[in-house]
Image 1 (cartoon, rainbow, N blue to C red):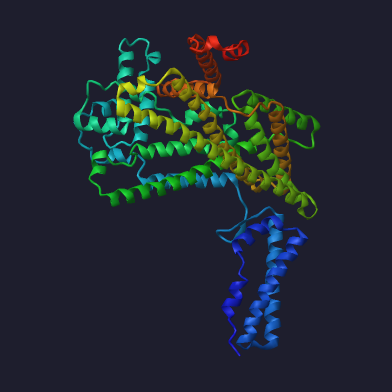
Image 2: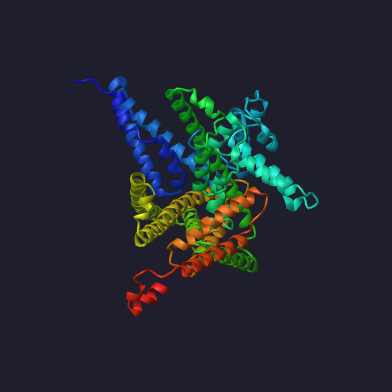
Length: 567
C-alpha cells in the first residue's frame, strides 16, 4: 500500500487565503457565506485529519482533528463577525482586524513622503553637492539654483523668481520688463536638456532667445484646460494621465541628477540600470501620490456630506438642493456632463454596495450593486480598448502621410513641397483634424477608468472611517448615494453628443499653451478666463477659415454643394 501524501493533500485544498480573508469582510453576517466558508474549511480539516490518520493517529485521531479544525474555523467566523459589527476592517498585510482612521492614514502618508524625499536626496541635496563646473553660470545665478539642479528644481525656482520680478508687481522699476524677459530666457535654456548642455559647455549664444521652447506645456495645465477638471478636482484629485505625462516628461529631459556629459561617459549597461532604477523610483512615487490623492479626496468627501441629517427634513432637502446646484455648475463646464455622469455613477454604486451588504437580507442588495459595478467596469474596459485601437489607427494614418511627405522632401528638396497641390494639403489637414477626436476620446476613456477606480477607494475609506460609529457611517453612505444620484441625473439631463470636436480640441490646445506660459509668468488664469479664451480662439479660427479663397472647383458645385461648403 502506497504511503499517503500529506503535503499533497493539504496543498491541493490550499485555497487563496488572502482572497478568503478579504472576501470575509463583505460576507460576514450572510448565512450563505458563512456556511460556504465552513463547508470549504471542513473539507480542508478532513484532509488534515486524513493525513493525521495515515501517520498513525487512528480513527479517533481523525475525528479529533476534524473537530479541532472545525472549531477553529467556526471561532474565526465568530471573531470576524464581531469585529465587523463594531466597525473593524481586515488588513491582509498584518492578518488582523483593526479600526481604520482617515486622518491617521493621512499622517502616515505625510511621514512616508518625507522619508522618501530624504532617501532620494530631494531636500535640496543638490545645493549641498560640489558645484558642477560650467562655462557660464549667469543663468543659474539668475534663478538662484545650483549647477546640479534638476529640471524640477529649475522649474520651481523660475516660478518663484518670476513672481518677484514681474512688471505688474514692480510698476516703479523701469527695468522690470527687461529683467523678466532675461529671467524667462534663462529658464527656457536651462529647462531643455539639449540647450542646457550647450550652455554648460559653451556659455550663452547669440541665438539664445528660447523661442523654440515657448510652446512647452505643463501636463497638469494642459489636461486641466482640455477637460476642465478644476471644479471636480476636490472629488477626483489630479488626473492620473496628467501625473503620468509629467513624470514621463521629467524622465525624458534627464531629470536624474546627472549632466548630459556624465550620461555620455556611462556604458549602455550602466544607462540601462539607471533607467531601471528611475522607473522603479517613479513607480514608488506614483503609488504614494495615488494613495495621497485617495485620502485627500476622502477627507473632502467626508466634509462635503457633513451637512446631511436624515432626521431633519429641512436639512435633508437643503443638502439635496446643494448637490443639484453643484452638479449644474459642473455640467456647465467643458465636458461637465461626462464628469457628472462618471462621478455620479461611481458614488452611487459604491454607496449601494455598502448599504446593500449592511442593511439588506443576506446582503442581496450588495451583490446586485457589485454586479452592476462589475458590468460597468467591463464596459469601460471595452470602450478603453476600442478607443485605443481607434486612436492608434488614426495616428498610424497621420504618421504614414507625414512620412511620405518627409520622404518626398528628402528626395526632391523644396520641390517636393511644391508638387503637393492644394487639394492634397487640405486632405492632409483634414485627416489630422479627424485624428484629434480619436486621441481625445482615448484620453477620456483613460480618465473615466481612473475616476471610477479612484472614487471606489475614496468611498471605501469614508465607509470604514472609525472616527464615527457604524450607524453614522451608514448615514454617510446614504448621503453619498444622494450626491451620486443628483450628479448622475443632472449629467444625463445636460448630456450632449459625447463626441469631441476637432475645432474645440485645437482651441483648447492653444489655450493650454497660453495658460502654461501665463502661469510661468506668475499670472493666474481662472476657469472663466480659459473658457473665454477658448471661445475667442474658435471664433478666430472660424473667421480665418471663412477668409480663405474658395477651392478651384467651387464654381462647378451645385447650389446644394455650395451651401454645404459655406456651412
